[in-house]
Image (cartoon, rainbow, N blue to C red; front, side, top):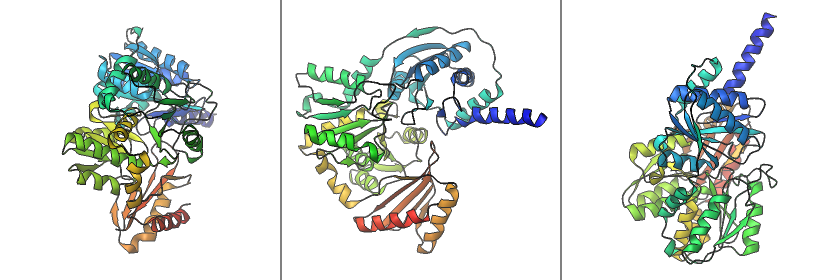
Length: 464
């Protein structure tokens, strides 16, 4: 009997803790995340951060409204005043943390996770992320289930869409935009209402609407699949629509639109790696010598373009909390991850899925070149595998096996995030995901696609 009691307590604690990841909360509904737990997370969050004023929004998932309500009640129970921003994308919460007089922003979202999942993202005043140690202390408070009673906080509602779009438009000169046709795929997530608001502003300047919209309206059932354009099987629908409509560029977003993905005028998917170097170069052309932050997965093209433009390239571990912290430390103008997260100093060092495509369209307009022409040089000089994911039993063992296989070639080793090995003519990064049970592989070479493909295939055989 005692064993059953102890086992029950152990499983309860394990389930409560399982949803806490390195820098956010994501869990399976009914297993590691539910309304009762989110209510407790709300209480623990306020106790740990002492936040007095909080803004909250939620994505289009079926479970998001009820989880948002549970979160609101938990935060109010501990005395926080809460502003409900309604249906939002994550970056609208990031903007709220800079625009509104609040201590904390919360987004209810599981981004691109399966429909049976949901989660929470947090941001402090001014765009400062909640760091992993704080998140673990919040977890411990939830596990303990012990909270201090407080006075009930107030609840209000507000929309920040107009000032948010005002801010987005400061990154480009709308008067320079050419008469492009832009194919947008919101994936039935949260991007659509922002695209509509931007369209309204563009039309007011006298330009025709540039957008051809698909999967535009939010739909909790995700009838066209979970919006994650990074998955290769999800890309043809956007690529085909670009070709069908004769669009000059295609842009697709994930569910909470903090990432955007590009397709050129031929419908070809453009690896996020090449977008990072292009945006870094564009920012440095405007600011002069400045710092740019990049992640360790694919690096050579970014480093070369930043240094050639007079900037300083600074590496950071993968993940928004790490990128933002290092950008703040160096006052970097821009930070980019090849997974399509792009960060901007003037956006509180936060990531945005709206600013990048606007900048790319401005580049197309100013250069007179197509997107394929803008990226072809970098693609030829630094061919890459793109990120390849593996489900493995033991990530550490697989990484150790890969390292041992190449040890006698004396590569330059970097263990900032996973294992990076530089062989001069090619390099590899292999790392465990911070958010999913996956091992992620990236390989690149210096102008030798055959070598890159060969080494990618070799490493695949070593992963178990």
